[in-house]
Image 1 (tube, rainbow over the protein chains, first blue to last red):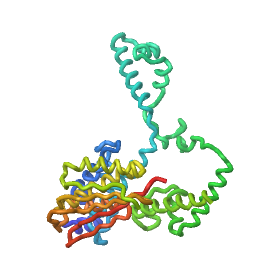
Image 2 (image 1 turned 45 degrees about the horizontal axis):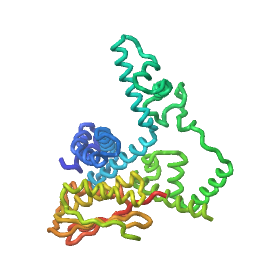
Image 3 (image 1 turned 180 degrees about the horizontal axis):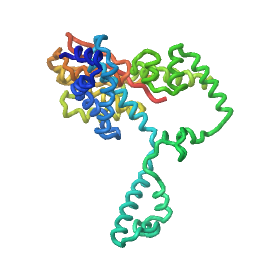
Image 4 (image 1 turned 90 degrees about the horizontal axis):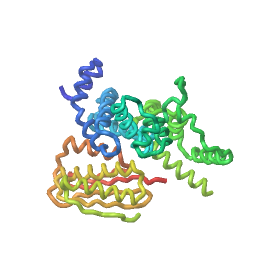
Amino acid sequence: MNDEELFRKYRETGDVAIRNAIVEKYLYIASVIAKKFVGRGVEYDDLYQVASLALIKGVDRFDESKGSKFSTFITPTITGEIKNYFRDRSRLVHLPRKVSELRVGIKREAERYLAETGKNATAKELADRLGVSEEDVIRCSEAGGVVSLDGAADREGENVSLYDVIPAEENVFEDVENRDAVRAALASLSETERKLVMYRFGKELSQMETAKRMGVSQMNVSRMERKILQKLKENLKKTMVE
Amino acid sequence: MMELFKMRVALRSDVMTTVRLATGGVCSLAALSYDDGEDCKVCVTESLLLLLRGGYACADVTFTEGDALSVLVEGEGGAAKNAPCEEDEIALALINALAENVEMRRQDGALRTIAFTFGKQA
């Protein structure tokens, strides 16, 4: 069965076995693209997983009747998902390297102390062994691993993220000026562009959701977004100079 | 527009790491963001691999600086072939997905030049 027939049959039947056959056939593309993004601080396995999920989603979205090849369609789709993954990941807050290293040292020494004496070490004992201050040991023990700004800010798990509660530096006058500048910059956009800005930054929809609402592809949204931001940046610069 | 950097590279897979490093340096000089720099490295090496599979012996890579960083990769020497494989399709789609203003020129049916740009940080 050729690709067109496979996709048509999958579309007609919704048979997961057919979808899996398509995914398996094109899994190498996920692997090829994932490899292109290695070396940016994310393990290949994680990238491959993101790429594979994009491939599965892509099979559902591909329209074989448009005449394009699946490999041509899926490459930007996978690339877009990987780029989104990098973008989302950059919102993670990492501990300074020194703190991370000391945390590892504290854990190792605490286990060693327990094995030697059968007792849990105090902060002072660990500090003496590691040649650091007691305060450093306490501070590092309290520091968590990686914290996501999207994580819940309260223990009850209400819908408030850390990102929402971090106070912004307030300057009312600047805010008013900025709002005016933004309004002027937005006025220079076309209706379609303003619609995209509203979906993406007003309603904070994902690129995928925005694409669905606007009846275009996610890649289109991504490209338009980049161009709009560039246009806004230039307009804002002009407004600020004036 | 000012030519920032130009290099002629032998189209062999063992020089790709050096090309990536040089491209990274140029992107840094041109004040591209980290992500754009990494994407640019991918596009340059994919372009070179396209020309390598196309039968060229070497290629000129020219970086020009203006409002954006423009990159032109042009095949030279060798006998160019016109038999694109699936790897080529993926490479082209990848370049199109990562770079702006992608343009390709063919000579006698075979791909000869690939040009693209990357925006700069404000």
